Length: 368
Image (cartoon, rainbow, N blue to C red; front, side, top):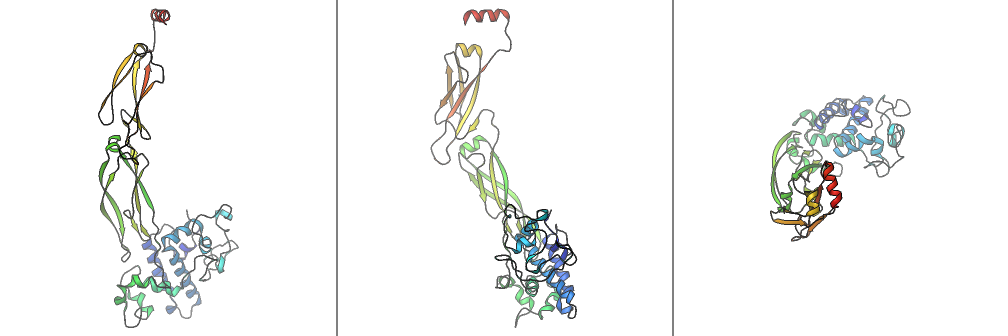
């Protein structure tokens, strides 16, 4: 759910429109309302300004995200994050639902808080806020970048057949990326997101360390053509001995690629359930079960450590409930202290009989 739809309405698109759909809608509207085609039509010229400004915001993933969440007024006032508590106005809109700063109202005929108002062109927002480029610059940069349809003569016809003296559109297009970084142009602002994926490992893997080779599928985006594709990518990495659940293995810029940047990928370690051990930090805990008779008279067991050693555990009896024995340096490796290990803790669980005969109870009373 977006905060408002004025910019989308200006381009006659839905808030779920893709970048390719935004480009196509702007191209269609800009060609229709361009001043060179509407020299005696002030309303068309004003519409050209509206669609150009709408495109400048919606074509930038970062600005579009802020606009979708908080609206145009918040963006114009310099908002780049969630507004402070109490800043929202009616309907949860930042700074109130009506009265856009710098002469901005609703787009033609759309309600803007004080009734139907008209969108008026402005190049400035609030102090420190976002400022629009001129509509001519927005259109020129769009044409230089290839627009939404490749080599379109109808786009270039409005630019005098070329982008500068001595050079036609085809000659300059190869270097269009450099032109976008000029004082009047606007390079895309990267919006890097992070994708997190669980990486399930056994305790044995985390004890010894393991080398992983994983194939992922990532989406790529060609900014020149606007086309998307899917490719396989192989990631190789080592899991250091002793890492704990929740530890992250981070890769920058290997995920899906969009117009604003490429996603980071984080693998989050998760421990698979072990049949014998529970982990507590760097310590391992295992439990042996003994019947009440042995708890009273004595018992002996053999416990196997995570690395396969055999340890003898015993009690002469009686063994009290909650008894446990600790074996130092037989637990998990300490990832931050190579060569050191946690402890192995052996807990004893006494199994009581579920029932006793009257004769057994009598004998126990005599003995105890």
